[in-house]
Length: 89
Image 1 (cartoon, rainbow, N blue to C red):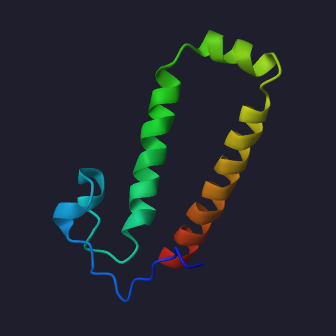
Image 2: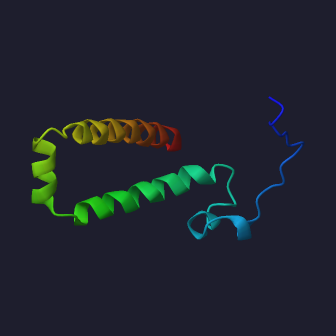
């Protein structure tokens, strides 16, 4: 425990220190929520640009765990989407 360092306070990260993709959301308290959504979009676009036949073969040959993860992520996003829609009405 002697090697642990403590920090008395942390200064707020300025916009210049944030990665570019997070700077546009820094004006809101939950900027990581929006940045995470953008990252999800980017990853989905990249996956959809990959060879679908090659992916299908990998999923068929013992890598069906990926299908389960995508299904769970979709369900989680669907819950957030539905909740936000109900709150915005």
